[in-house]
Image: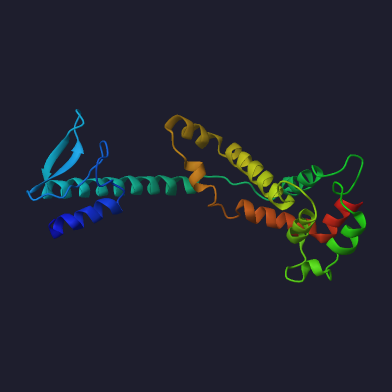
Length: 223
């Protein structure tokens, strides 16, 4: 196999084209002739082409891909300036409180089957050994509330999932015209730009945690 064919095989593999036997995909076959098998025709038979033609085909595909990528980047840049993103408001804290409420015992103000004394003396105690290697803050307190329970998913993760769902719903509502375009054209503009706002959903949730604070979380859970 000549050196040029080896290099071409490497280029084909690098760009995701299978090297042999793939229907309607390019492949290169070792040969002692000046031609190699290429993509299959309508009858599923290989078409034989020179290495020059194979290389041209590959370069054309690469250029097409680059052009498509650039067109998509240009489109996204166009929409970046007109997209609206959810802002921090009461709904951010409500998601946190509503999610915690799902873990309450009926008629109780504190978490299901948890030892209230333990929560007061250890979980809401900045000098507790629970925080020997972590910071005493809302996120870690929520983690500790989970560790001593048998929940299927950590409370903190439940909150993040719920927050993400509501954030994206609000994001779609704010950009309903673009969402309609996505449905019609099969594009994913909103999805590709969801994290490009000045404040991401993670930023808003972190602000909510800081706004609630440890004292606010303690009051909500224990009182």
